[in-house]
Image (spheres, rainbow over the protein chains, first blue to last red):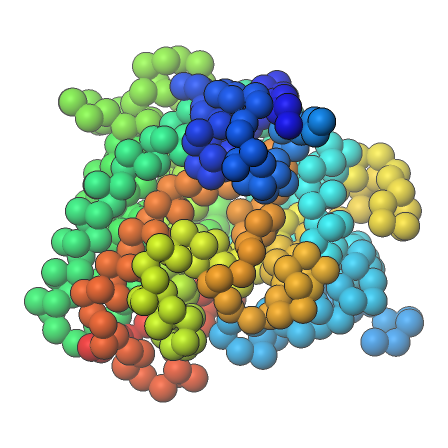
Length: 64
Length: 398
């Protein structure tokens, strides 16, 4: 899995950083910061959920 | 429903926790359907999870107050709906105005900052529970717990003195009430702006709040800061306190769920999401308007038409939440619930609300394991005539 985030459309809802803090964080303006673009398999389900929750669909997942 | 009458937004609830049954009918047969608005004009209502999500994340649908029409009769909304957004009132704006304001605020409500507030939240919760204990049963949980907790927190966060709360609460109630006249609501709003303007000037000292910080930064002007303050204060009071008190009432009315939560405290995070989904206190939904003609969900929506996105209907959609969507189940998968809305306007304070509910609910039931509603549950007064749904009072004993 390869994660990309669109910081331009992010509104800082913080759900990603709250649900998967090992993978996502927020900067001082609340914008998403990707900590781990290729997370371990144990996180894949959670990352799918998080991507689905993002209110502006700023998280894209490439599965390979 | 016959083919030739256009229904109005249904408001009659079958019970304290369930949205009007007509919403489920609409969702099943016609998830985007014609609806008559209080003044007689005909617009639309969206009831499925899929269409609600699509619409709220589609920039062709505007949130600007010039186009907004409430789905239920609210004379108090007349001064604001149909007029340009008040300064700082970002819920009534589209990008780029909305983006500029939201960017100034998002950093103060990050998941981490809200987590860091947890000790403060725990402290206030503990104090309020001790006060309740000293008072002895019965007490009204709204006045003694569900309202003072969010009120103290949002006051501290913004940097306005908590002693002003009575004034805030009074005006906030007027703003959210369906009974308020246009003149009363406009006066309440003006009072709130004046109050916040004044308090922002006084906010100095070590722990300056959000309003003073925004003033120092100088990116927003004084009127915008006052508007942001009024918006966050009213939302922080009304929606959070309603969610908390109604959650307690729901758990007391579903003893099996409460027993599960008590037995397995780690369920709390999911239980909070489920309570938010199941109760959806924003019960009249969200108004939107297409800026151009749009084909959507197989229907042609004309530019300027009124649309209501029903959040309670979307949050009970079996297509998303499964066949038992109408049941409270604190172990269900709650991903994608829309209690905080969806899209660029999704609730700014959602992580604060989560922190408060996650702290308050377990602490309350730990302190009072025998907590019960002190009146016949059918007699608990419900605020069906407010734009935020909940209980007006919740007498409890232990």
